[in-house]
Image (cartoon, rainbow, N blue to C red; front, side, top):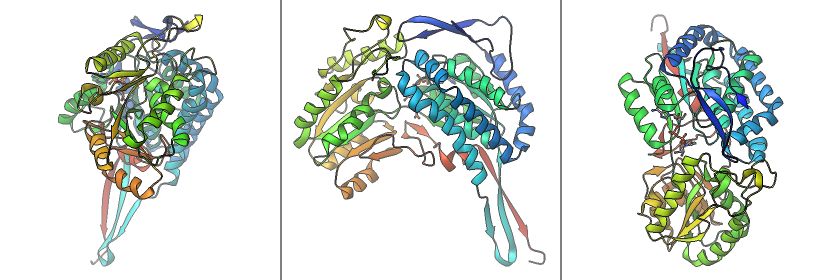
Length: 483
Ligand code: NAD
């Protein structure tokens, strides 16, 4: 059993806290427990983070970068243990955690450690009148709130730029997947992060998360999660003029044009739909295929989807593990039932796998599911499901594909598959989406802006966008004598 003993990451807390169970979604067994924090714990964490702020923000960029690199080293040295925790906590295939997500958590820290050492300031020559330069200063205590789907990957995506730029942090992982964040905070202390600089508070969203948002001494909030939670955060933070970054839900289109190289595209399209059980905000959930190719597309797509191995996440051959919780599987199953009630036909999946290895027979599994025959306006094609469920629709013209792609309240990610580069540029420019990939999906460079438009979010993370988000520009103008 994994017993997390400290309530707040970098300070060891003992006391009468209540605890919440941690359940392995592959086996439905309780594998440990974590303490549940409350508003008073957040207040304590903010006080500690505020106290640590002058020293951390005053440290040289070299020193801050050195600690972040040491923390990245620690993640890499403990990669197998972190991957195992992540897989047992979330349900994702162990190989995905070990080969992609945990290395990416270390890469997030290294990227921002290097970025602050490379940064140039702004300087403007005002001619005979004087000069102007801009100081960028950290903003104070940053509140970092993250979801359950890519626990450590997204946690570090927020914490790394916040710390690199000299902010101190109060961070809340999802209560559904608390384990890797706890281990991360232990590694941070050992890597030399001074006490109070990073404070991980475990607990529920409506208590711990809400208090971080409401706390008057947390001027910066970065949140990744559902759109309705983001709406509450925006409403609550606005009167306090907090700076907000909101990375929210999506209903992402995949557009397959008539000239797409289907054979080459298929492995990536299948991954774009079902990686991490479809529990990635950028996963495609609406496939739009040119009618000339829809028959060929469906034949090959269904062949590949049926070949996906759903099963024990600890098995190296597994492509899809269980959904994150029994509740979440209930929601996804209800969405499939609604799709059928809306007139959708199941091209494959829709149920629970009939054969599973003994160790995981009680897990929260669901087959990869493909639906056809649904109109763009129905709820299935409008609302985020966040599971292994995709719909396929045909289109006749590229204009129609773009209109349909844009016909939801979301605007996070899109992928376009075509061999005509001119068409790709024209379509990509018209797609209402924070990120569009052509002949690829999740081809990421940490310098590029990450985030969504419309109800998919406010602001961008990544690269220079993140460095700007966590700092306050102060313009200083000096007149030349006698000007
Ligand atoms: P969620 O909104 O339920 O929870 C996200 C986090 O917010 C959790 O830590 C939760 O405890 C906390 N929270 C809940 N209520 C809160 C409140 N009132 N105040 C402050 N914090 C609160 O989302 P989830 O179910 O954990 O994650 C799934 C969602 O995240 C999906 O909608 C998915 O699209 C989205 N997501 C978006 C991105 C992106 O980059 N755009 C990335 C990953 C996930």
